[in-house]
Length: 494
Image 1 (cartoon, rainbow, N blue to C red):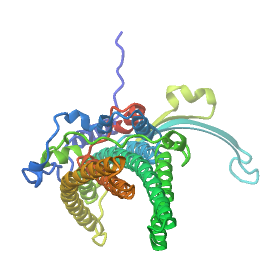
Image 2: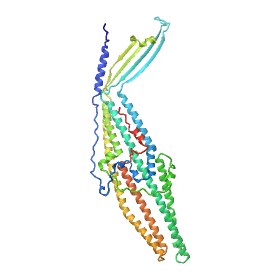
Image 3: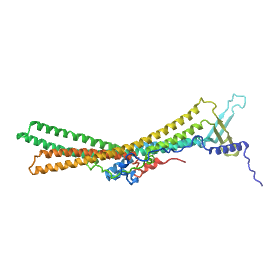
């Protein structure tokens, strides 16, 4: 006994053959240009490279602030990277972009739906034919529809979405670089303000003593009222300095609290105790100009946006070609519900639909032209940002080196002022001089100390600006940010 093999209806075979052919065409190279990463020309070295001693620990770029060996600063940076609201917003934008990428990729896949329907009808008894007739119909079926990506428009759109996701991830890293630099700069400013406050208090005590000596000299007939008034005015001018420094300390403390993801007063108590200013490193991790392209996340983001813009040209090009759609249907229909699963109730349909615009007023051609122009603009933006990045490094090197040279003179001034103060004190102790020269020497020493503190802060900020210009501080391995980093970098490429 031979089993009979049912033959596939000719139309169904034709539809399957056409579908197979279209699936083969889908694998062809999509229209539009293939992206190639640019290789811009950059200078071979920095202008002031000879004045800088490059550091050897390039891995330390990621957590460069830890070289200060300040546990509180390390804690502040970790808190900022883990809880800053701007970073959370950037992470949410990444999740949104990944979801939108899934939506774009779904356009290349078939859409399948299932449907069930039941209907009961009764005819009018006033009709001459089958008066009052009744009928019931049940339907169960699957409907599928597929639009083949013959010319690669969807593939180019997915390519653009992937590049956009990568650009957003680099934007988040660039934000980390900026936030780390801002926290360290504010912390350095706070510690310097506290140091200057102590110097200002020393200066007030010195001027108060000078005022007392001037009053004593006036009473003894060795001084004048003008001397007393001048000494009082200098003391009062010095007393006007601490409130400004207190305001600076509060300002920096509030800024740090918000950067760390909290409220302005969250870290004020922890930062209230004065501590030494951040030490300057012995050398700087200076890299070559060509390395800046690799290290700076904002430049990597620009490059990814250029890739996305290039892919959009293919998306626009695909709009100029015909579009095809294949609707398929498979279902069962019966008057009795239990007959829905019988072979006799089976019904199917297959079709092929195609369309091509004959005239659209130049819309699609203009879309290609717009995409090409946008790509040119993004390329120019990348080139502009690259030059600005190199300028940032040069400016930071200039500021750091000039302040270092200035400090040579200021340190000598502090040393000489300290020596003058000691000599005046020794002469006074031997009875060879009045006490007023001691006070004058102390005041000069305090002024030199204050100027040196400001110069050290300026040099420290020049160093921070250099780390930022080099793209350091993304802190991929910093505690508390691993979960955020993994979530941000997950790109749906399936």
